[in-house]
Length: 208
Image (tube, rainbow, N blue to C red):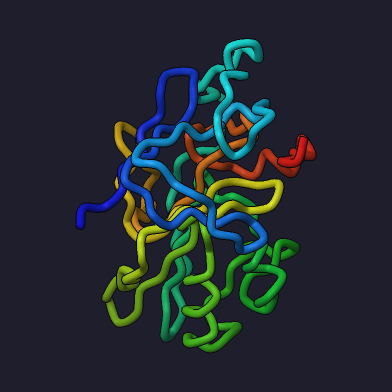
């Protein structure tokens, strides 16, 4: 069976084809169609689906010139090297909330690869939904996860994509994962179609 495919219509919705696993933020499996238009302007009254509101909202999918720089930084430890590209980060905050000894926002540099076990760091990084964080050990890159293709909705946040779903015609950031990534649906990201955490800044409410 072929993988699903996502494409983004100009100043309009995401078009998702061939998706079987579509999971709401409460764990409910949503009914899918062969092709679906998903809202990415934040204004639809039928979220997560598009209802045409992007036209009245004047939605633009242009990338902002003041977006975060596309830079992959490395933090080398004795047993593991951690990589981070803040451009891709969706601010899920697993890292510094669950492993603050390694990921400490009040320290410079904020990532210290020797302040936690390599195994704990791997587990944490593999939870990063956006792919902003990655790692290598003994010169070998992080293995690609073998997950079923799925789109999951983060409550008041982005779409979480897993399972190497093809995303067409985009500029990937340095070090970006093609297996898992997050897509903006609030309309405010400066790095569309990817989420950059702007949903938190605008208090995006996906029930509105």
